[in-house]
Length: 138
Length: 117
Figure (tube, rainbow over the protein chains, first blue to last red):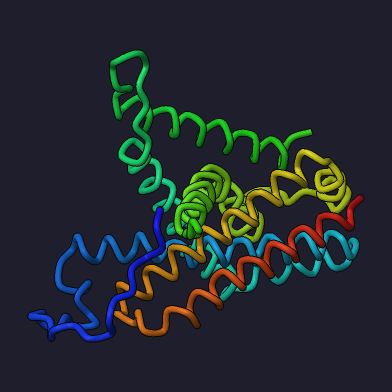
């Protein structure tokens, strides 16, 4: 590929209507889109929470007990309940979108969307079972 | 010279992070964030947690979960800020904060889990 051509900074004024900053509050589907995008904040929060737990375990018994007590404080608990709702919403929206992002062919026939989505949901169930086993079992 | 854009790589990380966080986080968040704090289920003992984190497979899974999820956040958050708030002119600052944060967080995850060696 050749190097990108140099464009001049000048361009004609676009005939574009100004969009409000709150454009996503106007319709349910736009709002659902922004909620879906907002799930990433809770994904990041949960990484922080996990790493705090790992650090507490690393530092020993008393730090671990302190972490457990802190996690039961009403504010932390409420935030984690909200974050659980968003994380479940993230999983559903992400696995529902998977067939559109992944186009698989076996021979000449395209693997049906329901099979790809179904595979993701099956993997979700299996991974959740492993998490329960690792934290509760044996 | 071929100029490579990082966007496809960042999108792959976003996608991989979306899948791994979708697979593991709902169950982890239910147990660690809700069920144990509320006393619905008994939390694991410190010894149980330690044994779990010493396990290389668990450590590698957790590192993958943390790093990929952070890059998932960085990519999605960056684009949501551009589209949602229409602040594309702050592109460089936002990208630095998002991906920089993901890199720092990943390093912390590797560092913490490495201590169990």
